[in-house]
Image (tube, rainbow, N blue to C red):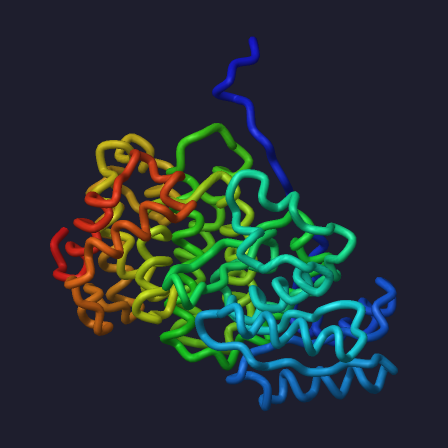
Length: 390
């Protein structure tokens, strides 16, 4: 076959992953193998006093590692947390980061490791063009990631999403070396996750797969991973939602979350573009915002994606393979998992729709939407999601 521009792309497949119940116990040996003697363990405020963190710190100290804890991480990560973490990293003469927690902790941990050896502001490394080349690559510390939610897939990503509080927008900071060196996917650290967080983060993972599959461009590897991720989530998420102690379902969800993040190197779309804007402006939970937005963005994109729905329908176990069948399944699946139908139900009004649309249009995720979208169109989708108009 002849080579054409439509099948030219840049691909990346990620990192070393230790998967299965009890694998967290291998963390000290992993640090020793990799030569990390003084890691900074980064987690969020809600986890810092739980046994999973206190026991891990004790385990690392018992192994003779000079570990310290940094936990000044909020639900939507901000630059001041990164700056404080960098100060702690440098002050403690650390040589690595263990990012332990949900998407926020992972993003902040990766950003701390990235910024630990930089002199420029973090915003100079926004995922625009080749801004990443501004960084001193030798000043980027290594990261081991331990996700406690099955959602963002940040453990296999080369970027962090950090809120710029002055500009009220979420910024994607990118560098190839932000990819964690190793990942531990231990379902035992996810069993205490409440059902509503299990649902919201799990649907975030599903939407990563769905938007990546629907994004334009040639990347059959990403598409195959995305379809298998959707297949796993369709079966495992309701099980994990009803019985958080089901280790098989929890393992499948962790795998699928990583798969979603691997697949979205192909692109995301309008769901994430709007969710990033809404999260920055209203401080909403990212996964929940995505879950609410999905059917409204699907409807907007119908003409561009309806011919691609057969494999999606088959992946989630449907007999009928039309767009309408998949949309109906999404609506019922969300309901089954306790997801609100509208943004208004999570206290988001539509009085700032034009501002949301403008921010969403400038978000890098918008470029992966199956059809080109402008600020006015994204604002209307946002209004539809606030008011339940599909």
